[in-house]
Length: 176
Image (cartoon, rainbow, N blue to C red; front, side, top):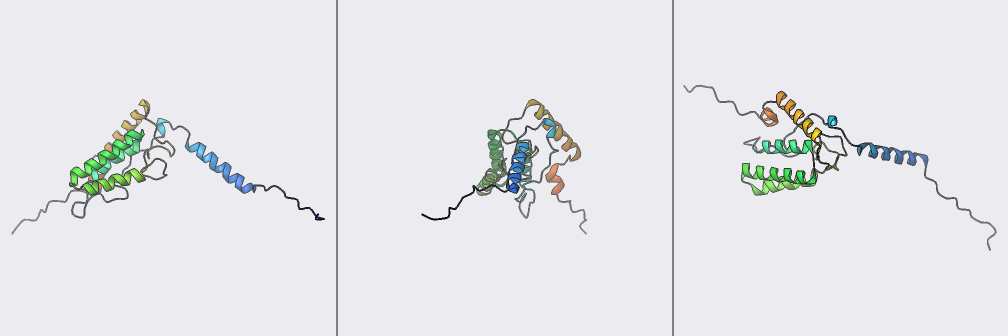
C-alpha cells in the first residue's frame, strides 16, 4: 500500500468562462425578446446582394426581381412566406432571362443563405432585430410595413434598380 495518497480536487470552471457564458446567454435572451412593430427598420435594398443585378450588357436585367424579393425578406413572416418569396424570385428571373439554370442557381442561393438564423444584412426578416425568426406579422406590424414602404417610395420614386442602373441616355448628337 502506498504511503502517500493523492487527493484529487474537483476541477473548477475559471471565473472568466462563467462570465462569458453568462454574457452569451444574456445576449441570446435579448435577441429572442419579442420585437414591437416600431422596431422595424426603414426599408433598404441592395438589389441582388452578393450576386450581379444583371448581365454585362443589361446591368439591371433581373434587378427588379431581387428588389421585390428584398421587400419580402425585409418584412419577414412565416416559413411558407419565405418559400413563396424565393419561388417568385426564381420565376421572375426565368421570365426575364429565359435561363432556367440561372434562375435555379439564384433560388438555391437564397434558400441556402437567407435563413433568419444567419446574422446577415440579407437574412429573412432583416428589417427586424436579429432573432425574429419565422414569426407571422401581426396586423399592427403589417401597418408599419406599409408605412415604411410608403416612406421609401417617397424618398426613392424610381426605386433601387433605376437609381443604381439608370437607363442609358439617348444619343442626342445629330447626324451630319
